[in-house]
Image (cartoon, rainbow, N blue to C red; front, side, top):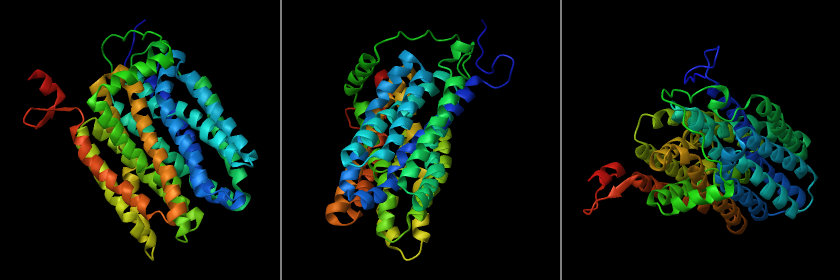
Length: 434
């Protein structure tokens, strides 16, 4: 069978674009589910009397499991295929979110939203996207990964204002049932349209001109994930990538994604308006992250990351002043500026990971790096909730997060480089040749 890297047999569209579109929709629905705690925190606090620290504890478990499931998700894709992995993850998400409408105790929130939703969302996460992109695309990988990453922000764009409006008029239970239904709607699309590998339908990855790569040896997914982790732990670059992504999580979904709406409510801003701010961030992040993917194919990824972290740090240091401003102009400016940068870090981080560790290992290795991201998110989620509970506001949480972003802006300049004896950093390939 003749393999093509450009078009589907009998047509002009490579099937990789269809796979990317299905992955986009799946990540979009999963992102809407993950973003829901931001609009649930105050209603749960009001109905059950749970503190923000206790609610944030469940969210932090969710974020941890989301991160640590990533490398195993990438390994499951190698073992079971993308379609089965996505179907299992989305079915678990829809069922667990639907059951949260019946909860009456805090331990049920931890079990359902912390453990079940965390595990399900981890199966449908960025590590899965990275594996699919590297499998289906030899060209345009940065652009496609940027678009898939941006789907997480688009999930907020679509769902958060709608969920906030539903909560305002029909209560939080109607909102969680709605988002569970949205997750369930992706299941038939994945079942009928998703394909595991381009070779399964007689294609090469998009843009590939050479022979098809041999199918990988099937391994135990748990053993494969831990073997990859062992290789990473011996690498200085892995530690720097994971540390920078820890700070990324500390400054995005763990802090802003979970606590911006409650912080706005503390300052007298209505919940629907606060959710609209996050939606605005989603609009600008969609463009920012997609453009970041395009730039990661063309520009130095270290410098891209340095700019992203530096600008994000400055915006977080500005946030308390924006919340205290009399007009909404300052907060709108924050939403636009921060939104452009929300997860623009993902495409260059994945590109560096693939360059350093190889395309075949990029999915699982990136999965462990994302685990570092989610550790940071969990720390921010619980830590910011505790700061608000015991100190009365979020000021210190925003200051710590902004400062660490400025530190990350310096750290990322040394990823993929080696130090000469005189202390000057040079590219790794140049150091190895010297």
